[in-house]
Length: 501
Ligand code: TYD
Ligand code: MG
Image (cartoon, rainbow, N blue to C red; front, side):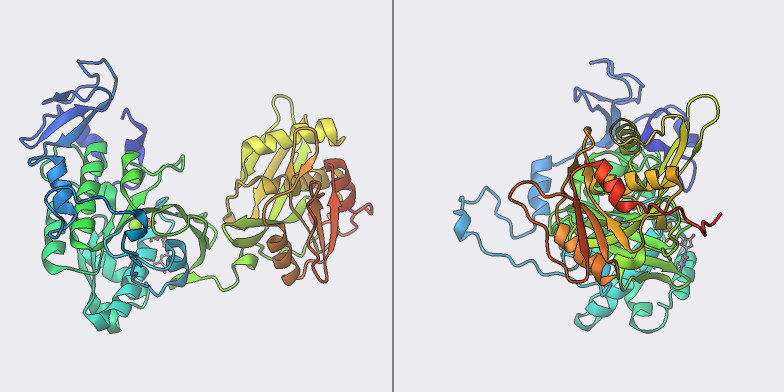
């Protein structure tokens, strides 16, 4: 296997098997170099025209031209030529109608529900719960659309209809409207699925997954760049041309990238990522692209015995049972879009053996951790250069915002000194290279949420000149200018007496 995108997990049949033989384009396809655009009949590792390696991608020969297809995709009512330009102010105000799926957290992330005719990609690692979520979404939409004759087509290329039924039964979706208004077809050939959807006209088509989708006209294995791209193009034509909402399931590689060509992400209207550790129950749904809403909103779910449940109080969800007061633990207030979430940052430092000390970050940016270790050593007298350091966000959440710098630094110092952070305290702030603290956006929203959840003390960066700190009832706000001051304010001077093992 020469290209990373082929290395996705959970393939139906190993595409590598089919990959070894010579690949010759079918009548309707050519191998097109992605660097110079030259087309070949045979697949080769190197483009004979421009010399690029691994640049040949199987592509459908399109008759009629793409422009004509695009015009057709715009719908039968589209004019043949280009219409007269319309002044911005005169463009009809299309208030996008939406299908509510009844799953609040999913609708929230999309910006209020699925837009008819939109193409949405839902990505996630194998086993995170994509199929479960989409079956629940399918059922929810079927129930809300049933009154107007709507229904949902679930095209499964990964599992048989019986397996989908088994999941539906576990989720309690067999009885009632969802049992009849969600229809399953175990089919991965895109032409047949599209044909079926064109004639039967569901309100929503779910394709599980785009990596198992194949086009008869192409020779390459399922999951190859050519197959994924052309399949997605077909589904886009279906969505735009027939006004059917299409949701594609996409696998994510170990590195966290959507398996498949980048064009897939450009093509679709929205990209949602379902994240979370398989071992932990919480799942976060984020939009990284959304043409019909903000990319700020996150949805929080919990995987249970009966599928994904919406989490009632997400701010608290990732906190676990943080009441320990153990050294190395501090509560941070992060902001996911407009939603504040409280998370416990944990650190453990231990004297390292010979050789390079270990540095492990889970749910936190390892580069940030390395930087904080250096700043702590040089600017705050917390020497960790020879220590093994483990840092972790409890609950399986992954956060990259710099606001977690200060809590992480406090957790590290607290662990090294073996002293707990003062109880009921939260911390938030970015740390600069000189050990100075910088304020972070949304401080008031973060602290209000912390106060609501019973925290009474917050350590925050001193606002820059002109800025002022919010006044929050029941909360003592300690503003500090440097990392050194922050550590002094956060960590108890009394050695802990009941330190747990
Ligand atoms: P699945 O939706 O198949 O994941 P994906 O499509 O992303 O690969 O679900 C994965 C896991 O979720 C599976 O290991 C079993 C678990 N699960 C539950 O815990 N509860 C449930 O109700 C269901 C349906 C699945
Ligand atoms: Mg699945």
